[in-house]
Image (cartoon, rainbow, N blue to C red; front, side):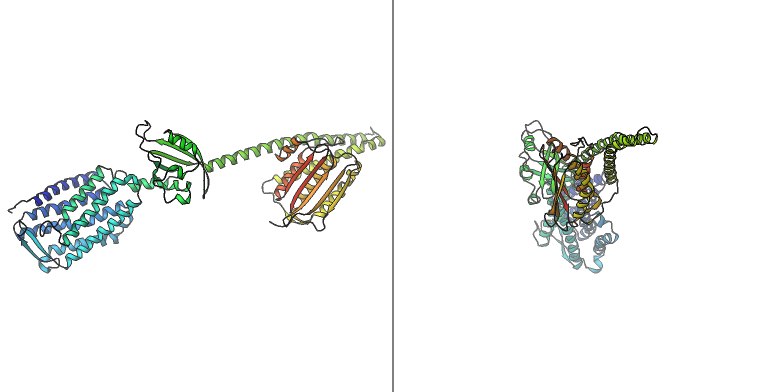
Length: 588
């Protein structure tokens, strides 16, 4: 072969050799997505070298031989570009399907066979000839129908690959801005070059500048890989890691404007700003956070707690601020990690409340055992001793009769105490149910008043009632009976002789019945009322030294709460006490 070298041929041959060497380096040292670049560069080097030697050839036969070699690279270039774009865009699953592999490889193989056998059918080229009008011999091509078919395939793969590439880079982080710009530029150059060749825009007639364009493209991709580290840490990998993180991350520039963030950060800002984050001042996105702004303005790393209100709820956050350059000479960026402590705080608060409730229950348990050990044991031992003495004729019938009122009072006190302890203990059992039902509250109150009228008479206490007819309540009957009984017992215990206890009940509204039990007895001290509201247990003796345990009021509070009712105290020392109850009157 007698070659006549020119500038176009030399540039292609030299760049083709360099591209061939670079492709060998990539294929022997890299894995994954980068290997597609290696195959792309290998295909392009074959095209460039063969076309370079075609441009220095003198005879038609030499040119036909070289164009057959060229097409080994020509049919492979759009295929490997497509595979590179799809892999980079995260479409590996599509590439693994056998049907898709066959679809994208059938046309290149078929086109290569048509080129090699063109002298039999002339489907790819209608005619090939040598044209000397350009300053050196060049191959003049008259395309056939198969040529245009391959051009359609060529442009289809370029379009689909570039579409996914643009879509991927459009949604990727701005951290990869330079890499993305290089790749997108490399994607557009072959399009423009091949289009200009097809419409006749050429430096000289018959010169195809497409291989030159692909040489530039592959060089740009190589630069993006090894200069900007495009594929050392794939954007898709970084994004997946950030999106999997539940903590919010934001990156700020030196003016505290957002330049990068992950999706977890979006739930901590208002809906209005959720699609307009990049470029926004952090003070605009996280409003009313002076401590955060102070650290940013002082250029200090550190941690600060934030309380953020959004449409999604209220969040307790811990902001961890880290300055990438803390020498204060050239502050480039600030990274803020937002850790959601809402659930931890709620769990801690819940644990604290449970601990406090457990402590109260333990104190109450100790109190109850103390009562049972002393207040229950004492009266029962006294009764047993009196009965033994009576049996042994140690005391006479008259003496026993004198002791009877004291024994009766002790037994009555013991019975009431046992009833309260048993009912309260049963209500604390896990799985204990509340048997709510409709009942006549008026009948219940009358029954309890009649039961305690004798105890009130002994202290010359008057009990008056003002009850509306048909007071139908909806609650646990037994619990309400215990509540009303305890309040009447308390009123009698803390009343002097000739006092008045008034009980009134009527409908408040469609949901509740109001019950008021009022006396003009000794009243309750303010500090004792506070203890009652806090659920603390305390006791005091009545006006005739009647014993008390404090359990009764605690049971009242607990039972009213369990039945979705309320209880309120009004009291003044020396003037008396009023208990106001709201009892549900119909199912919730």
